[in-house]
Amino acid sequence: MKLLLSVCLFLFAGLSVVSLQAQEAKLAQQYYENGEFEKAAVLYDKLFQENNRNDFFFERYVDCLFFLEDYDQAEKAIKRELKRNPDNSSLLVLYGNLYERQFREEEANEKYEAAVASVKKDGYQINKLAYAFIGLTKFDYAIKTYERGTELLKNEEIFSYSLAELYRRKGDAPNMIRYYLKSLAQNPKREDQIKTIFQRFLQGEEDYAELQRQLYANIQADGESTLYPDMLAWVFIQQKDYKNAFRQMRALDRRLQEDGQRVYRLGRIAANEGDYDAAIEAFQYVYQNKGPSSGYYIESKRLSMLSKREKIVRGFQYTREDLLVLEAEYEQFLDEFGRSTATAVIIAELADLEAFYLNDLDKAIALLAELVAFPNLDNKVQAEAKLDLGDFYLMKGEIWEATLLYSQVDKAFKEDVIGHEARFRNAKLSYFNADFQWAQAQFDVLKASTSRLIANDALDLSVFIMDNLNLDTTRLALKMYAEADMLIFQNRFDEAFQKLDSLLLRFPEHNLQDDVYYLKAEVFRQQRDYEKATEMYQRVIDGYRDGIRADNALFALAEIYEYQLKDIEKAKELYETIFIEFSGSTFAVEARKRFRLLRGDNL
Image (cartoon, rainbow, N blue to C red; front, side, top):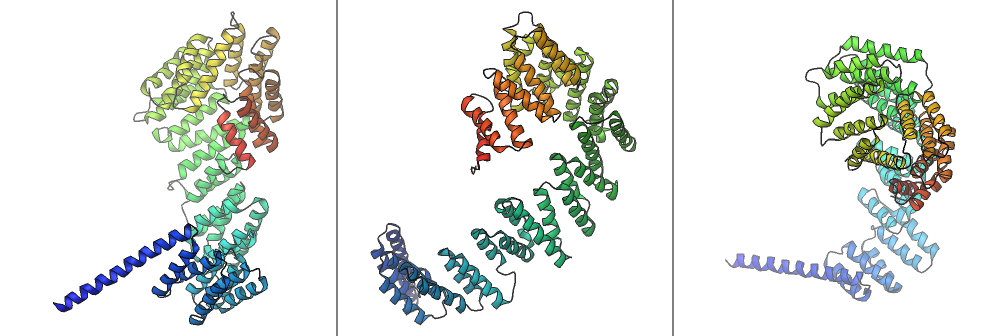
């Protein structure tokens, strides 16, 4: 019983001491944060003596003496600790900092050098010393410490990540890259992390060229590793060099005997970025080398055809023979896999090709009519096919069939975006047919659509009709404009331009002039004739600054200068004009964001 009581009293006393020390540590921290360094120094010295000479309390004690500029007492304390613990290299860093605060630079550097030289073959001590230097932003000495540690431990990679971080802080890109790649070899799981770091901190083509050079060297030195080819492919993707990225991905796919997934994903990236040649090459590799048993076979073949179509039609620089070759490839695919729900997307793409480029509306309609009748077809796929089928009927002038299909989709997907799209197309049909008042009423409703794109388009058309109906009692000019708009929808650009030119001749003072120039600019931009597009947009901006097309023209022109003409200063000027002079525009928020990004703001 007495023994138990003694143990309990001992434990209670111990807990009381720990609790008191915790309170004192908290109080010392409070004094330190409040700048009461004399009080903090007394407590930290006491805590140091009572806690087995804890390094943290000693460093805080000396730090307080530094703030008090009591350098004599600080030096005595450091010397006393060095005598007691001569293997603690971090004390030499404190000593060097003491000299540096007294502007004794040479003596300070001697202590720093001595600290590096004294480090032992101990990973913990090496890290501790390096952290002491980093705390003083002595990155060069921290680097020396890690390099010394690398030699002592005879391990080239053990401190590679820490060295990479230090060289990054110094802005030394070649060494930063060198050590990050070493750390990747040490720990392959860091790959995504290191890619993110490179993305953030590599500056321009010179840094990426250095990364490529080092990756090629590492590939030659270690031909078995897949890390470096994968990283090299990633670098090419960052530079939008998808051809070279494909070569690396293909080599990896073959070496690892994969299923083509990485090449397929690269194809999708290249297609989204408009590099259709690289995309086609990637997709063809997958379906030609992996065969029908591959999970990527059908989709690769489809995307290959889609990329070929985008390649030949995007620039409007194609012949009918080009289109017929593509048509034959689609037909061959459908002959191989049949016409069913599994190939519904292919059928829809072929129908689009027939309608908009081969001008065979009857064939396009037949394809989609068969498609929408497939049993068990996904509802969304069927709805999209019905919308396209409605467009084709509209292009043939069969308005009743078009509106019936749009209405079916609208009714089936009342609160869905695809339902809003159907309602928008129905309203636009009425606009093309010169039923302007009903069309405007529908556009007014669609301004509240959850789809920003539909809402903005609806707003534009609503305002456009309202402005021009009030000024044109005959409606003839607006009708001619709508007819030209319809011809553009059909890709009949020459006829559309003839109609627009006739409108300008017949109604030289009409309010539609800026709309005519804007519509022409949109066509030129679609055709990638940026010189003519720029001329037309500028005509709208200069001559019709108070019109409803001015902010649209400014934003479109700014995009051309930013993305196509690469004139960043001009793009900034135009974006700034939008959010300052057209603050109520739907483009104002986006224009401000683009301006800040181009200015280099960290968003």
